[in-house]
Length: 78
Image 1 (cartoon, helix red, strand yellow):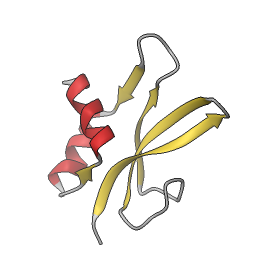
Image 2 (cartoon, rainbow, N blue to C red):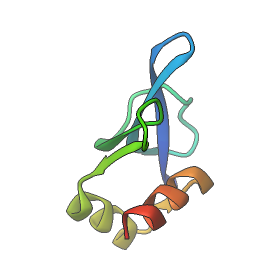
Image 3 (cartoon, rainbow, N blue to C red):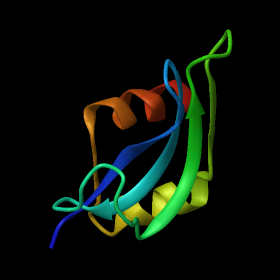
């Protein structure tokens, strides 16, 4: 069972809001996550990204793989 750091979509139609979560790679996009790590709001200018760095680092140390989008968000935060 592999773990991925990925986005889950919230918000209403045409106003997306995303949570960054750690979830099993077989879990559907909005399925139950293992842990919430932060959020990403692309509707603000500039886009608002808030992540718990300690939790993210802990999951990456355990071998979790970020998706391409989450990897880009992590690079922005660094």
